[in-house]
Image 1 (cartoon, one colour):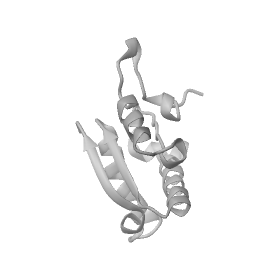
Image 2 (tube, one colour):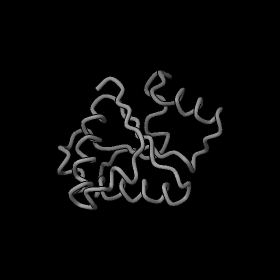
Image 3 (cartoon, one colour):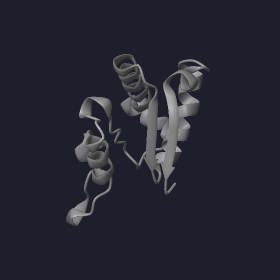
Length: 117
């Protein structure tokens, strides 16, 4: 099975040493964030959003991760996306409101930042 890479290594750098998320991860670490306070949600960009959930339970797992981090820190999530990830997160926000609770986003997400979407 071919699946998307997970964790920070999924998108910190790309071929040839070009950074994607590494500078943001490093800067967040400089102000006190640690890996237990951040989550990199890699996804298979080849699939339509509906199949991300059907095949990989992507949205269920992302919602569970945000809920876990909210319970651990007491803080709502700041969700940051890049490129097509912005469309995936917009789909997620609608999906989670339908499948978890209409108030889920209000209760678990403080900010959504979309970069180059």
